[in-house]
Picture 1 (cartoon, helix red, strand yellow):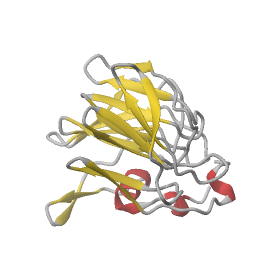
Picture 2 (cartoon, rainbow, N blue to C red):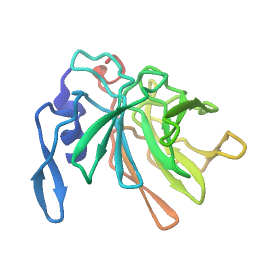
Picture 3 (cartoon, helix red, strand yellow):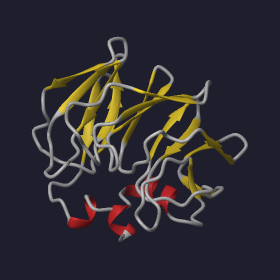
Picture 4 (cartoon, helix red, strand yellow):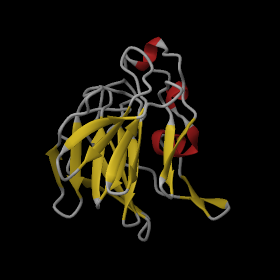
Length: 205
């Protein structure tokens, strides 16, 4: 696998390259502690100031279930319970203190939720549209997953209600794409960048 094609953005580069020990600190960069497990295309999210890195691929291309947590206070890593379904290029977001992982290679409709206090994973209702390389964000107590791909770029947007444990389609993105980024500002979700062309290596990791 050509890892340089998969490392989208500086955060992904920091998490994926063995031995790279750089982290943001204000307007400068400072040395940090490398992850114990080298990986390509993981998902990441924060809970109470702690960074969770989940899944991804080995250098040889196999999907991972490994979960590692970075403590910003002690500048150290520790392992947590692995995802039940090994996968990479999944989307991740935190809703009500629970980490949700959605889709990805190895489980394109799979949704699993991690409780950091119980250190336990639970299967949730699958998304209606299978997707790899999607992005996710949370607004008003609901989880939104946008874009991604199976055999073609998708523009569908799905909303997850944790109370009913169900997904519904929402207004699609005007531009179908995958490998995009998403961030929530106020009550709006911004979908940034991505690709509409699917190289052979993307779906055959």
